[in-house]
Length: 427
Image (spheres, rainbow, N blue to C red):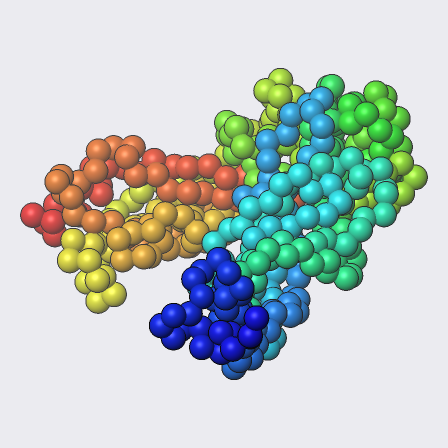
């Protein structure tokens, strides 16, 4: 049989399908597919090649911010929170990277905080399980979780280790963990206190170690005076207690002793047993312990000195500095009664401010001796619904120092004298 029919397959009279001629359509389909593949290959070669983002860490630092301090719970797994600031860059041009989280030793969670409009700079709040840092285990480097975009616009999630981050973040994490653990585990069992020399109260505080580990504790000398031999540094075994001496400064004496004369908590420097202090921890005092300290302050201060201050006269001044149209400046003449020779301060330079941002009283001093003296100061006030204040509504701060102790109290001023001066000006 002749093979000429293979050449003239489409001519009338060609052999029907199913015979040897059936191989011709398959050959045409194969040829067409090869042509399509060739066209696609040429097109792909012509497209720009996508370049991945190469991430460079420009800055990484850690700090414990006020909002990072979590509530401490005694007996819970010690934890802490710190904020890590990260700034990254990418190459080549056209690629981007955004930090979405952090991984690393003790990290149990992280969340990105709002840190301005720059997507390359992020603040990440990190929650820590403190056990590795309290045990003194070497901290490894952090890993950044990033969302990258290449030059073709394709996104990917990558994890990148930051070499050297253990040296910059590890000490901050260790400090935060020791502060949190000590704040939850150290408790004050009891307090005794007596007046000390000068302007301070000396207290013996019995501190119990409930951190579950041996710790070094140093009483923070908030009085900032000479080192106390009795204070020193103590190593407290887990569950043990010891008494440490703390000196509390008394800035001024008031009568009666105010509630804030005793602190609500005491600061301690803490660290691993046998090592240097790592952090400061605040340990709360209960109401009974605060009352003990207030009682010692009262015994230190005693009664305020016998100094009588009386308002003699008042006169409204023409004060061009008053920017409030209702404001008034009143010259007060005060009689300071005799007593022991001492300097008496009248008024309060740092007291409340008026509407035009001036102290309520200008300061004045009186050198008290055997005879009464007269002192002058200016009272800044405003005309209100009533042109004169009731008696006792206006009080004048008074201070004097005796034996190294500053006494502060308030003297009510005669409302009738003040009203007689203000009535013509305010009506």
